[in-house]
Length: 86
Image (cartoon, rainbow, N blue to C red; front, side, top):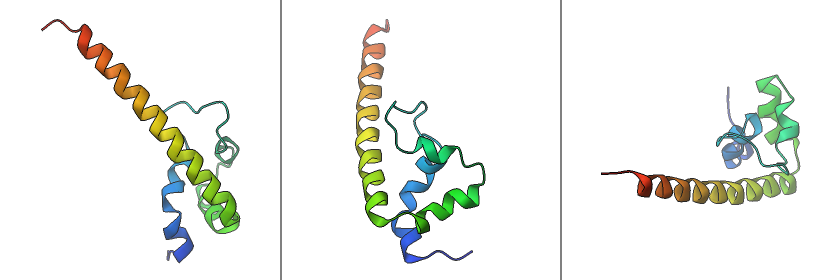
């Protein structure tokens, strides 16, 4: 399998196209519709088929969502750590 310049440029979207990398998706997640595609090759081909504007919007959403989820996880971890008796 060879990869196009486009598939390399948008490689970071392959995981969220398949599933949420951090568990449960947020209610407005635009990737959910792609999870219904059970054929992984078809999911991967979306990188070549979707307009670049759509891919850029998906990337922006994903990056913002990851940042929010990571920040929440850090806060929860810090709170749990504070509750521990040492």
